[in-house]
Length: 122
Image 1: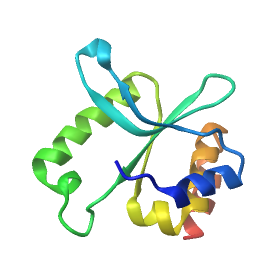
Image 2: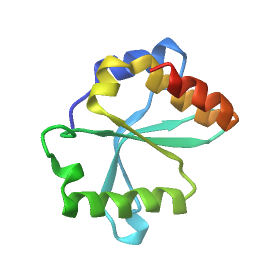
Image 3: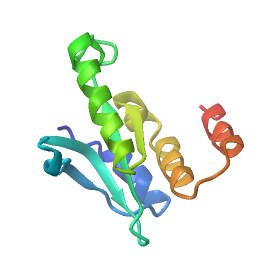
């Protein structure tokens, strides 16, 4: 996995916790899935972040087999009670503060109206 330094700097800029990278999860279910970034907050709340590469180059995440496999993985996050946010590699490198604000808003459970304000700033 590529490390997105701009993304990590954006998260640090707004005082998000330092995420773990390439964290394996769902071992108990017999899976070897890894999350790109896992943020764990002081109260134990976790938020997973996936950086989707290859969006414009017909990469693994948008081809049918990879897309379906990702759906299973993302659904498992939800079933385990872990919110997941997905960003493209362009968003992670060119809009890192925006990505960080989305993570913070998710953690703070901001009303959807506030989330749309963040989205519209792009």
